[in-house]
Image (cartoon, rainbow, N blue to C red; front, top):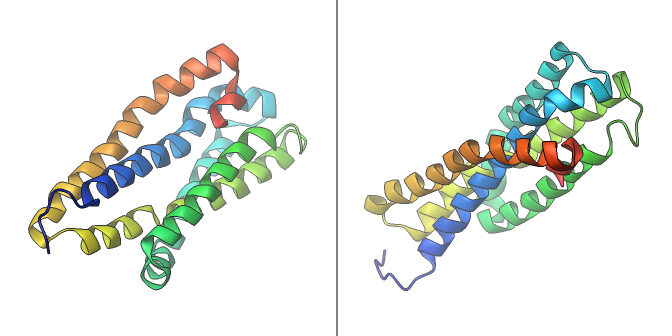
Length: 178
């Protein structure tokens, strides 16, 4: 494995860290926006808990298949495909409940389905990232690369609440999904 600094491998790690950041932004925005969503969509805290859990169910159930897809089709193809899916599902989360479907139970069902799909689409992020790390980095450099990726994820976790809260106050909860 070459240690040539001119290879695109550090750029790849930066992109993967960015994906980690965005994945947390798109998964955590709902938890911040929930306080404003619940009264408008006529949902209870228990129902919102079901919506939050739907993401984790989709994410958990698809981890192993996601790894297989990254192995079969290559991590870049898988990541490009799922990131486009994240974008679509995130925007639909701001559009569908309470506008294209009625409030109450229909909005709950729509949110559960959207979050289940978002979880499934985000499940390849780390398996595909691991596959890319294996392809581009020598074994004695992979921990640094993974550290950068995880730092991106934690940064996403740190910046999401203030960003989403500011957007919600300024222009409404739906905007946090656009």
